[in-house]
Length: 623
Image 1 (tube, rainbow, N blue to C red):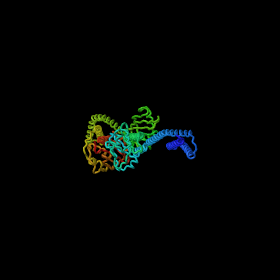
Image 2: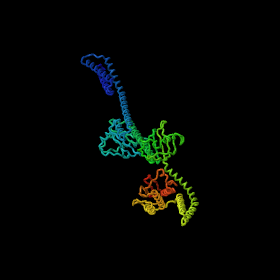
Image 3: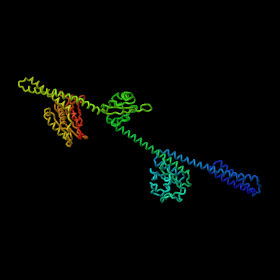
Image 4: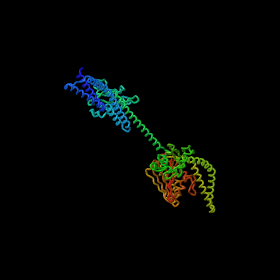
């Protein structure tokens, strides 16, 4: 090879080296080192070109040995750069993979921050990220039913929605009707189709107007071995590879994990809410009173049972009253000490302690209290108390005690009747016979009259005692109570006139008939009318009124007498207690027993110098 050929080959090789260097400049994003190398090679190429020009046109001699060295250097430069280029390509691909992984990790991080987002927002974000990571043009996401027979399309990528001309996009796809895109479910693995136009037995075509598919890849999303979703992308410019499968799989698994976490949190929140509602309902609807107060005594829980027993509404108490205001002065502090004593259930609890609470109206209510503190970090955070109204139990205990006393009293009355009744009859008879004697002195006649009256009083007392201790069960028949009241008033009409008492009855015309024992209710009315007449020695008005209220008949007997002092009012139904000089103290007690045997209730309201009203409540439909 002559010198001229060596120079030409050297120049050509240097041009190739310069071109490769320029490509590496672009590949390395204008790395300063490769810019300098390319500049040096270009300078050497220019120098060789000048040497060739001088040799051809100026007859400038060339040094064969120097040109041979230049040729060798040019060859080495081309070979070296050619060897370096694949390394740079590998580095570039690695960098691209790293950037892709960074993008996927960024997408997964953003997904993890979408805990408050809706399902649609999560799936839309994941699908757009999948399209971007795989450099695709379209994408879709469908959810699988439980038995893996039906796919429900949930999301389309924005590009797919824009390019697709099918207006009536089906939402539900039975698996057996799906084409190639359903193979990911049937084969339970990712399916990559880089030439969608090629013949494929699994393809079933797509509707007219559907976005054209050139390449396609989809994957099944699995959860515990079951396919829960199918995600697919399409129309990437290059062929889909395993890296694309991996990116799509990891991203969709991250999406499904977030959806499952969100569903689990929602289920847990719902369960907690239901449990809270159940506990609240359990507390609020308990028949017992439940009150909780914080460490400062402020009431924070006040249930319906407490409202019913104490008469306050929850709004009047919670955050407004302290627990000590529901007890007599000093009692709340005493109860607090007992909670931490060993006297009732051991330290830290108070069990079945009988005490009293104060109602809204100031009434003292007997209660059975159980209480315990709620501790946090070793300190008392709150105190919860459960209490039961003992009024009914006390009444029942009183009735049981009264029944026991009546049983003993009944035996005594039977014995007294046997021992005293006959002598009383004899004394009364003898007194009446002696009174008939015409020659009897007036003083003796007065004394005999006194004996007879006292004998009659004792006989009535014994009769009342017999009734009191042996009241028979009522024989109820449907009756007209207003008619019975008029009958009793007619029976006592002479006494009313003699005592200047004006009788008045007010009863609605449509008052229904209801079952009661006429004889027993007649006796109650007689007792009440007699008491009213005796309470008005100067005369007055005796008013009887009745009305139906909520399944009950309310009867009111009102007099215009002097009234009853408050200290006597509660004791009037106590056996043998009477405010009258010659009263037996059994009339009201017997009346109460007769009314209670009718499943009713009787009580008195009175004001001194204003009169007294006796109330009777009788059920219209007794059981």
